[in-house]
Length: 164
Image 1 (cartoon, rainbow, N blue to C red):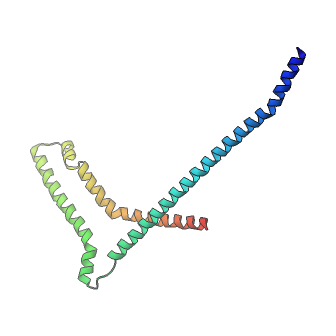
Image 2 (cartoon, one colour):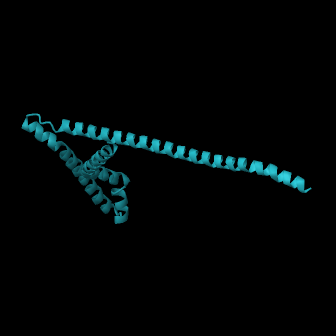
Image 3 (cartoon, rainbow, N blue to C red):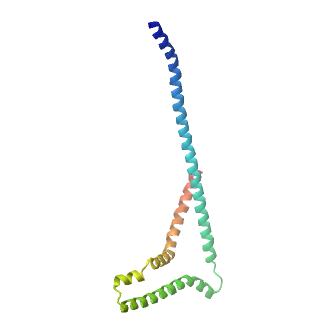
């Protein structure tokens, strides 16, 4: 009986290094697989960043071309003055028309017996708020875009210096 146990333990002892080696190999393979997945993910994110940088550079170049075209003087002072005044003039005309219409509607609503809460809802609805947001965004949002483009250009410069 003892000989049988010793023989069984001897056989199991022969398998022990193989089992330990199998478990070690399995752990190493899992670690290598995880590292490969991380490297693949880093590569994908790096390519996505390169695409984003390329798109940003393209947008900056496109905006530069648009503004360069619009900034070229024609040589005629009257034409140049009209080009400069077109946007503000249209803005003032649209705002003046809105002011006259709103003022007329306000007077009509007050004479018809509406209270101020109802008049507010009628005259300052979501569409009117959207129009004003678009006008303010047009006139003052461009400054934010220019600052954003300058920040993007600085980021691109840093990125290119890091790659070098």
